[in-house]
Length: 40
Image (cartoon, rainbow, N blue to C red; front, top):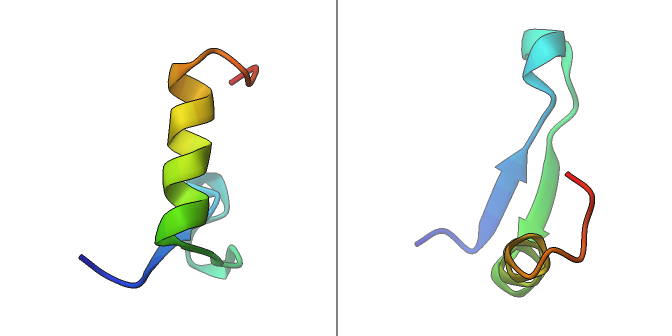
């Protein structure tokens, strides 16, 4: 598993900036989505 997860807006394609999140940050985000804490 990589030490960071890269995320970008695919609508912008290759010119989209890549946001990098640590494992802890990404796991926390996913948990909050699963818990219904975020409006996504």
